[in-house]
Structures are given as structure tokens and as C-alpha cells.
Image (cartoon, rainbow, N blue to C red; front, side):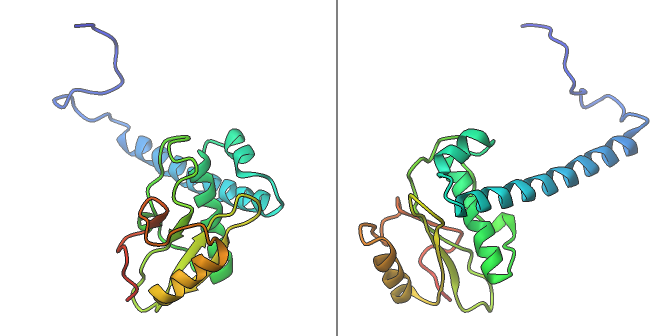
Length: 168
């Protein structure tokens, strides 16, 4: 076994005297991270809307292709609806490049009392098509109109933010 120095304290060591200061630093850094991420997501959405290919965006950001696309879709949906979806209801991000060209259809969270779900359909060029769909029939019609080559029943092509297949 190698005796390398570690920054982790064994469980039996006492807490540091300046614990409160460390926790304040963590809180401040977390807050800064959230603000910076929101700014980056907005810039990514604006760049995509201006015609910058997502493949070029993912090469210049810490996001993989799918994560950059989802960030832009989320920002677009928030701008259209005025509703900010809680991050814990959104699909989990994959490691950089893990989901290239997968899940071109994203169905947003099922929110109590909303009556519909936000649907995003990715396009290779330009922004994703966004629409609130109130049910399966409206969802299928939207997919067929925007990307007839996609199958709205294929789990490889549709990513649900919880409650797959449910509309109420």
C-alpha cells in the first residue's frame, strides 16, 4: 500500500477550528458556480440560436454535445415559458461526449397542475423546436411535423424528465 498524503481527514480526527469559515467559502463558491453556469447556459443558447453548430460549442465549453444541447434547450424553454424547471427534475448529464446524437427528443418534467409538458426536438442546424404538449396525440403530431424520421415511441430517441409516457 502506498502512503500518499491526502486532504481527507480520518473520521476520528476533530473538526477544524475554522469549520465555519470553510463552510462559508464552500457556500460562496457554490453560489458563484451556479451564477457562472447560468451565464454559460445562456451564452450557449444564444450561440446556437445565432447558428453556431452545437459540435463547435461543445468543443469550447466544459459540456459534451448532449449536455450543451440540453442546456440550450432548457434556456430556450425557460425564455419561452417564463418557467424555470428545477434542475433535479431534468435528465442527468452524461460525461463529455457520452451521448452524441442520442435522444433528439426531450420531454420536460410533469409539473403538478401544469396541464402539459414542454417538448424539445433537436435540429442539426438552428435552435430546437419547442412546444408544450398536453397529451400523447399532440406529442406524436409535433414530432411527426418537426422530424418525421424520428420515432416518438423509441426510448433511444426520447428522453423523459421523469414519468415516461405520462401526461397528467
